[in-house]
Image 1 (spheres, rainbow over the protein chains, first blue to last red):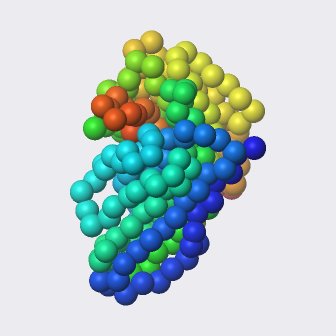
Image 2 (cartoon, each protein chain N blue to C red; image 1 turned 120 degrees about the horizontal axis):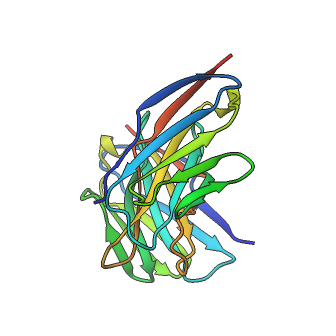
Length: 114
Length: 112
């Protein structure tokens, strides 16, 4: 069966510090991968998605970046965090070969920038 | 970007049927429409998915008209535990693949 894990689950970072959130998927190959963010009391905002190794599409210009160094690994990074980066970050995957909207989400990473 | 529109909030009582409609004008020909449920501090959970006409599973029904520019999620006999945010998700054509954009969500509040 397929599983998705992301970490860390919770982190508190000062403004201007770097960030690295990691997500890995097991039990499948060539998945489409996604990073979403949810600010407090808000909806889900798509940040990045990837259809393959090294292929990253950005939906919203900001100080975040994403990388996909391996087929089932997706990393969200920032060189300098802003207060507005606080939120609940969710990684997700879906089967590439089907045009379905069924996404499988990780447990989420809650980031607080102080 | 495709634009989806949902009501911001809805109120209901236990035992009633709830219908939430989502408008999506730029849906891709081969893409599906999917609905999710989200509780606080959790990732969204898949509810139902469809391409056209009507789909039913053990928890909900999904109605999609022929032009596929909208869809309606129907929750029969809601309970207090159905209080959550409901998102409509549609695929978008894109050169690099298909980006999946969530609507802004509908907050459903169920009272006794």
